[in-house]
Length: 305
Image (tube, rainbow, N blue to C red; front, side, top):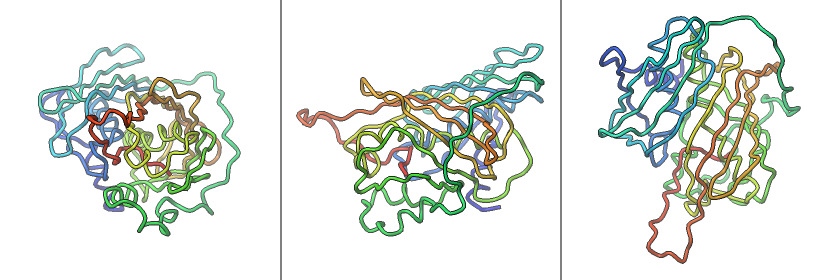
């Protein structure tokens, strides 16, 4: 297994401190704070540790405070309900004595039932597309120093955008984005692990879709725009493997009031819909007249491709 993917799996295993209390570390991916997808995935992993054979079907989360990458994160799980078919867990992530994130997840005993789904968008497959690293190869020297690790650092997932933007001269594009994603090496046959990793990678790309109509280039205007996730919701419809190509198709139907809203669907290569995602985030353009406002660090946790 690729070392960077193995490290992520280790990060998601968590240390059990007490029956319902777990501790996890963080990894610096070049962002200004703990990557939101990491906290979502670790919180789901903590909830998984308290459920037997039921499978997660949905999660809803709020980001409350910036996470400190230098400090461990403690996850406290509340076993809210264990019914005949469903189990509900609430998880609070804590750093320095304060909650930074909370999550509610529901688990379901697998059953048969009616079956229908949306059709996958008709887009080019991943085989002949360039990945994110290849797309940046000709402009590395033009990327600000404090963004290079964020944009060019090795990831546990490969991203191949169908319609990549030019981060130096983006122009205004429709609020739609299609990206093929896949883990960089083969993974064990563990459905809980694949769900946690899907939760992790679902936080990439999504909010950036809200910026495509506004001509925003080098991540979030090189610091001229303040962007941060406010919430995140994910529904697991069907089992999938994240070490096989998945199409992350997203759209942003609205941006207003300094917030952007985006929703996404994740498909297998054969067209099977495996998950749906929504996210709202802060998109604030600081008023240049207010000289007292502090500059925004451009290294934020959702890279634009």
